[in-house]
Length: 296
Image (cartoon, rainbow, N blue to C red):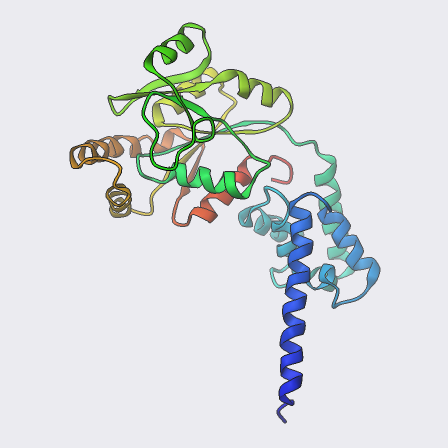
C-alpha cells in the first residue's frame, strides 16, 4: 500500500529537519560550544531516539571533535568495539561505558603543543592544503614565512607570506630571526621567523609550518622534536598536470621545477608521515589530525 503523497512529503521534510538538527549539534561540538561527552550524555539521559544527539552516528560525533579526523575516528571505534553504523542512542550499556570513558579521558588529557612541518615536491598542493586548513580550521595556527619572491595573484602580504626585499631578508638573517631559510629553485629565498613559533609553543599551541624540503631538513636540525609530514601526489602524471595547469611559471621554469621535483620525491623516506594529496579536504584533515595529540 502506497502512503498518500502528503505523508511522503511530510516524511521528507522531517528527514531534512533531522539532518539539520544533527548538523547543528556537530557544529556546536566543532566550535567547542559543546563537548562530545555532553552530547553523548544528553542522548543517554533523554531516551528520545529521534533527538539529534541520539540519532547521529557515533562516527559523526567523533569526527565533529576539532582535529579528530576520519582515520583516527575509525581507529577509536575499532578499539572500542563500536560498528561504524551504530548511532549514539543505540549503543548498549557496555559500549556506552567504553565511549564515556574514552571521551572523559580525552577531555582530561591536556593538549600537547608541537610543531608540524608540511613539505613535498613542487606543485604537489602544499599551499592549497594549507589554505584549506586556514579556511576550515581557524583554531590551527599556521606559521607565515618570509620570501623575496613577488606575490602571486590572490596572495596577501602577512597572510600567505611576508613579502620582503633582499635587503630586509639579509637583515633578518643577521639578526638571527629565522628558524631556517633557504634559496629555492636557484632564485627566491624563503625563511621561517622563529619568535612567533616559540611564543605559540610556549603558550601550549601547535603550529603548522608549510615549507620546502631544504627548510624541513633545517627545522629537523634546529628542532628535532618537530613532526615532519611529506605530501605526495597521486602519481607523477598528476604532479605534471598540476604544475602546468596552474600557469604561474614559464615553460623553462616548469621543466626546471619538474627536475627538482624528481629529487624532492626521492627524499620522502626522511619524513615521519606521508600523506597522499588525492583530495584536498581529506589531506587537510589528515594534517590537522596530526596537530592534536590526545586520543591518538
